[in-house]
Image 1 (cartoon, rainbow, N blue to C red):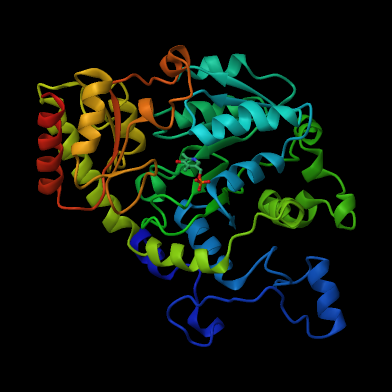
Image 2 (cartoon, helix red, strand yellow):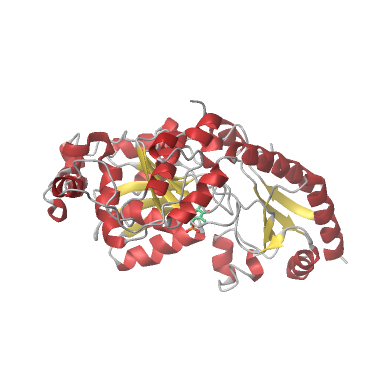
Length: 428
Ligand SMILES: *Cc1c(COP(=O)(O)O)cnc(C)c1O
């Protein structure tokens, strides 16, 4: 099946669900084991089937299979939010004393998780500025358990060289984890370029309508956790007996699916951030139109970026599909169909103009989400980042002129007219 067909059919066989053509919601916490032998086999992970919705649920399973196919992985796990997905992905391979090497330009929530909450648990992150793969390599030690990056992360909207970073990671016997939330599998499949684990906040473009929180982890199945002694030492939880699961050795029993099965059987079982089947259902409905939506998101964003770039009241525009972007070349390689729909731009006139601009917009909604069907404007200087000192803001690339627009699916002419009017009012 090609991508657009997978969006509608992958992972769902009506014959397995009372002939329902639309994936049904299974609002049940527990499942009948039937006889004792089947119950025992389920607990030994010897047969497929559901035990309890914290571990798996048929609605969630359809979404997992569909996402795995869309990203080209061997398996997926859906969880309650994007942050839960990041947490689960790291907990699955790192413990106190271990380290992460990560790009410094991560989603704010992930920055906090790595910089503060993981640190309290003894997992330390070394943040790397810029895009140079050698700078990532320099930070790797014997304690490093992964390289962690995002593609098109905001506000920098930078494109990192996945292929080169995967090479660096594999040379040091660690996996490359890529948060692919903003490109979505429609614009880029990081696994094709050597990424080992892919993460999504399905809350954004994948569900696409601003109505369901969710996260996902997709396992490429390509990283061989036990292929060398070095790897065995780094990832003992995957390659030696799990005392909490009858001494199972994940790499022996589940081969290339070891990582994703452990994430469910151990991390999801114990931490409990499972997805509600209702949210998976909403996400599956939204996902059906991903290609159509992303095409429109990208097309409109490019038009608006080009328009803003020639506007006399705009200081600068950041959108990697613009020839002026320093990420243009890499974007052509990794996201040739488009760069998703987030645009950063600088409005002349400082905070006073910024406030007037936001208050004058009538279509984009003033909030902090992205990837909604509706356009969203965010003014980090006076909202999301207002607690930071001027210096901290500078480090995040945020000034009093910085606006972030997540371009929605409205008529682009309406959006441009509304933006132009608000810019005019902001300069009065
Ligand atoms: C929003 C976001 C997250 C966190 O996802 P939630 O679903 O809000 O928990 C993680 N990474 C990126 C790139 C995001 O945009």
